Image (tube, rainbow, N blue to C red; front, side):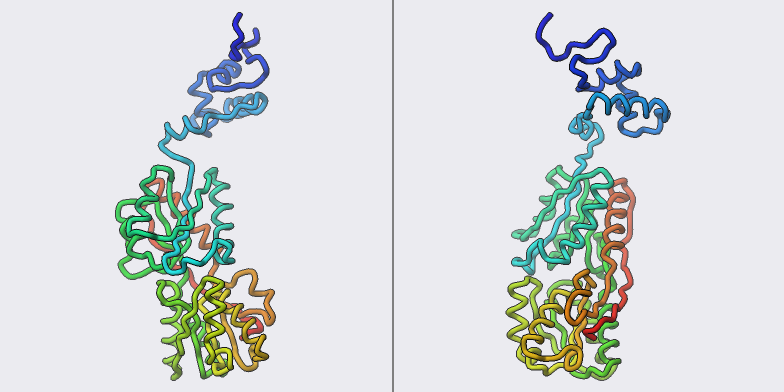
Length: 347
């Protein structure tokens, strides 16, 4: 007898107790290799008693199915791409609390579905950057956290690649499937609240080069003007280092010339709270501040931050659901969620 590791005992079990392929497992279970393959894949054609027997034998013999072979048969990679494009904010990091909150929700849902994640933080260098990602053959589908200023690139890819869902703003005639909050309505909520509590000198802090933030600004301005008030636009980056410098250089803000401020994100609002506190400008007595997102951090600031809430957990669940439906060949429409204003101490 040779020294091969493939020897079996008289009872049909491999020597050493470890089953390494479906044929060996089928021999022990007394069924065909095809039945074993279908049972381990959860195929309902295999009755539950047989499936449970095969699964028990597989566990007992530490059998791990050949995932690569399975993926070749199904033409699926088991990988979902999560892409964060940073066309307008190249200095923004994955550690940004909004990215981390959304990514955590997506990661839980994707891995619970039996898939793995391939995460990409992308600085777009050419118009076809997204097309190259989806045509790599590595992914079953792509989820995008944000559209940045890459709307045209997303549309170009979505024209021929269906399993793609983006978090962001829905524009008229948009081709790609998106999930996001009604940003115009969110801006209106912020303006109505500030005006209602007596604010008259209003300011918006944000970078309006992206669809989401531009829509928040548009809603805020429309509601304020309807009440008879103008809005000062104070350009502010989302990248933390640039954001702090921007806020510091908005002298009208830091000198207390505005009594109502709407920040395009909670992070901008929190940095503004800090800048005003450093200058002994009381919030909300002299300046009322509202953020956007309602991240978990908002209830821990001093004062606690009023924010326009977008339901990130529900949004993530909707994105994953739509993506898997699109992977299965279904056409799905974009989803726009309603915002709500969470009133805390800052306004």
